[in-house]
Length: 370
Ligand SMILES: Cc1cc2nc3c(=O)[nH]c(=O)nc-3n(C[C@H](O)[C@H](O)[C@H](O)COP(=O)(O)OP(=O)(O)OC[C@H]3O[C@@H](n4cnc5c(N)ncnc54)[C@H](O)[C@@H]3O)c2cc1C
Image (cartoon, rainbow, N blue to C red; front, side, top):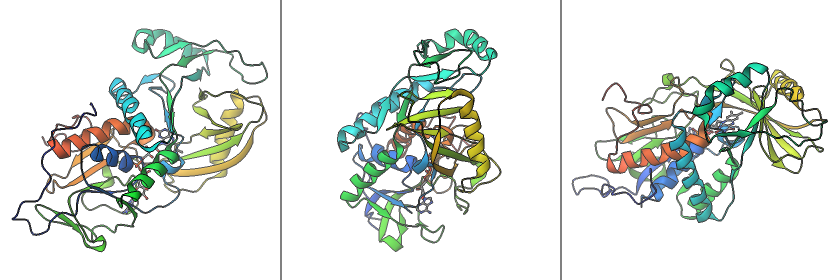
């Protein structure tokens, strides 16, 4: 989808409406989903208000921001890969240009094979991965990595510095009075009517409310979480002072992502049973044992975080409006690939709300009803 200004529906209230909107769209949740949607709407001239609890331990605050179009043992090509990459490559540099910040780092990544079978998968998938992979010619000193089966280069990978993207977005909108810390209680803080929605605690009347709330243990009365299958993930920050590699390395089902000054993020675990934000000894040991299978240098753990990913059962994002209250909208289910998929989703949802553009049927939460 292009960034050209859309032919948006006018967002002014009719005289018959009881309350004049103070803003056009209230976004609840300023993680990856809410921040991206805020930009997409703003670029279309929409008055946005972003409300967020400001809590630590959210997946967006701890995520490594890796963008990898080909993933897993079977080298699965990400759903809508070309469209997602195109949207991301336009979206993040545009935010960087507007804020003067740097947080988007397109850079090839390295994938090391863990067993000979993976080499066969790469050979079989050859044509499908054309343009996405390249030959690996490792020039590492022998004491750095164990890679008996070789590997390959992922040419179109990238890393989003998610905390910086969130911070500069929130600062940018706060400077215009469009971001505030708020813990919105559901349903009592939201009063929907046919034409507007009121949030009296903040003196707001708006045309739309969009829930970008990720996984929440508390129920949302309009968008039940039953379409989600949330998964806790743990991530380490380590120091490997002797390792000088600025590409992300994928191996043994985990990744090692450089963040500068000899430090790396290592992740991540995937746990469907413990939906909390507590780092565990088991999580740390799982990551370290896998890491030691391919990194031969001394490793020092300097940080350990955990959060719950909002994974959709469909394994695709979930977007759309409520069937009975079409002024209530939803952007969720970003799963393990939020950084890669959110620009595509935010642009699509913005066009849907403003110009009634159709949603990709595979992410439309009303699919089946239409
Ligand atoms: C360990 C780990 C590693 C990961 N690594 C990667 C990676 O490398 N690459 C990648 O693309 N993705 C990664 N992810 C996934 C990524 O983090 C998620 O896809 C993404 O962060 C989800 O963003 P979100 O905005 O939907 O949800 P969240 O980040 O949960 O944001 C929701 C926000 O809404 C706020 N909120 C909720 N309810 C309310 C309310 N009632 N009132 C006010 N505010 C509210 C919350 O406080 C929060 O700030 C990782 C996740 C984990 C856990």
